[in-house]
Length: 186
Image 1: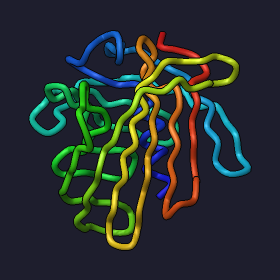
Image 2: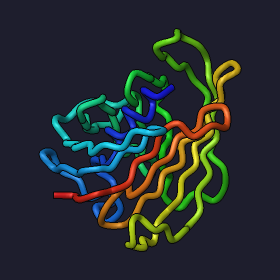
Image 3: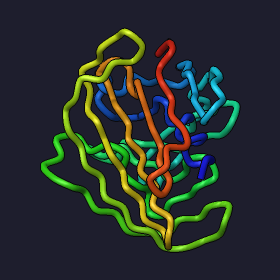
């Protein structure tokens, strides 16, 4: 499901009414990521392009060369209703401020291979992550999505003042894509 992280490359940084320190976003902001796909490595610019509704919250669409994401803060939850070609109803949580344990989600998932139901669990912990030679104090968010026989694990490190500094996607245990912050936000 490479298109999920391609859209999440679009997730690179996003927000709305969320805390500006953790997700410092405004329309027009942009970030640049290094994307790793097996043997390929390339640079992906991302930009917040417009305001959109995401579930019952007002959010933003983030676009890059390989896809887009639609994200919003709904209270203390950063949620997405679209990540690349994957669509979630209701929007799926990517980050929950002050989470005290696992967060469960159930809903429908539309993807290139069809429509179905899915369930997910979000866990979080504080962690210092190195991106290049730069250490970032971050919140590590792991979203495990189960849809039929497919299990997708999306791990994202959110750093205050930067947003996403690293993200990795595994499908059925195999890492198929990762991104790292190269520059931004600007």
